Image 1: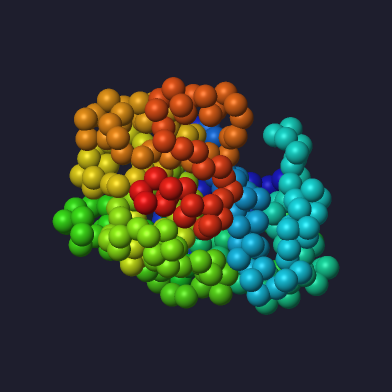
Image 2 (image 1 turned 90 degrees about the horizontal axis):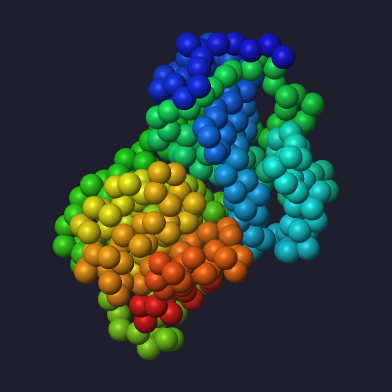
Length: 341
């Protein structure tokens, strides 16, 4: 395997994602950029400087399955049985089982079996790439290498995306999110910024949270929801799931700074990821409960774990509820209105 170095290479060096992308596009590079931290990794596949696929190891198949569920609104054959079969075939059973670019192979299989068309596969690849790039662009430290061999060569390509344009779109999205976090106006004026453009894949499920609220006889008002998660993809999903006419969503991706940001926003409810670096959800929940302002604020633990021990820990730190990943818009709304209705 031939490897091209882009600058010095050592464990946990400072990373400059924009600089890396600029070098790769200017060189019209072909290959794969692999980036690693202690817990997660990114793989960005290029062909002559254009992006053909991007992958992020955190909740790999959960994100793919979430997009396919929404696409199932248009394509009935993408039902639960099809998606389960796909995951059984391609999702690694454990950390020791290595299936190269398993998610891309799964998309190729769906296309080959004619569950989706190549055009739909291209849209799916672009939507996933945006989530991956948004999570990568905020990375400041890690380990990387660029491999000039493109291991996807034997598989079909569904799109060749302009990397510079894609990065610009992701940066605009991140700036909008940052402006929401950095500005703290009166809570009744806080608004959720809409996506840059309508997405063929990734649209909200046909559940209107305002009508859901009316059916439950709750008063019409604007609720502030704080979402604390180090995964940008999860934060984006929650924001898209919660109707901006009913909810102001404050997105927080740094658990260490979360306490200050939550104090500033004074949310009606907190969605708190358990598995985060530096300060995990249990510790942060305990800290919040010690503060008089959050003694009775609903705190919902959001996690991929659903075991008895994990739920017991959540009760010990006095969390209000539990939401298991992956979750649908309906799952999220039921939990939210249960605790703020």
